[in-house]
Amino acid sequence: MITESTLQFLSNLKANNTKAWFEEHKKEYQKAQGDVLDTVVKLLAHLSTFDEDIASSYLEPKACMMRINRDIRFSKDKTPYKTNFFAFISKGGRKSPYAGYYLHVEPGASFVGGGIYMPEPAILDSVRREIDGSFKEWQSIVNAKELLHSFPESVQPSGKLVRPPKGYDPDSPAIDYIKFKGYYTQRFIDNNELTDPGLAASLAVKFRSVKPLIDFINRAL
Image 1 (tube, rainbow, N blue to C red):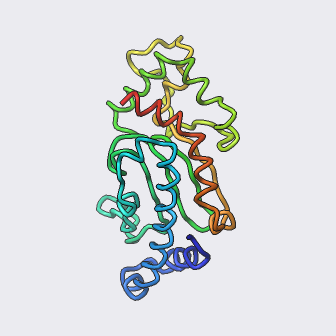
Image 2: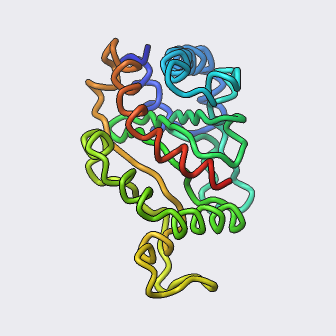
Image 3: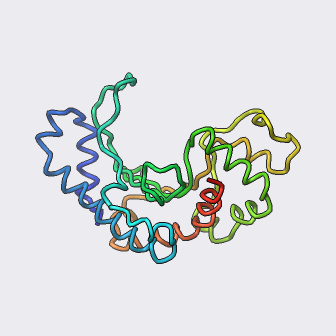
């Protein structure tokens, strides 16, 4: 489970983001990574009870976690490491184009949710067309009580166009959603919730509420 020591490692890394410090504290990193990995293992078990796509994907828990090394090739920020742990669980694995569930672990700034963030243009267009053609169904999903209980802001955009994309009717009742560049839910969780032994079970309830959104998006793909 995620503990105070998990968060302390990330705080220390943020204050000492160098390769030399990281190598000196490699064991602490491995312990912190293991804490998050343990949570991912539990999440996979919970998700597999109600999401057949996850159950049938036989995902390797470690493959659901993003690397801690930053890609600094084209960045002005040359710090070598991320100061968070991030896990993404979707059918086909984290490198697949499918929507899925995610957990971001960062002291004082952790959050969870589900959906698809900044997809490639062809994938985004497929989702937009599905929303345009099945808007009543989409409305029922994004306004469902279960979803709004877990994610009060419902679906959010990862950026939004000012004008409708080419090929879509500006008067479509779905046009506000068609302008979205991505579709995801988000809920911030504090350190106390993050380090609670019942975290995985609590997140499973939230993830269950977002499953219809994920199913709708993945159907479009």
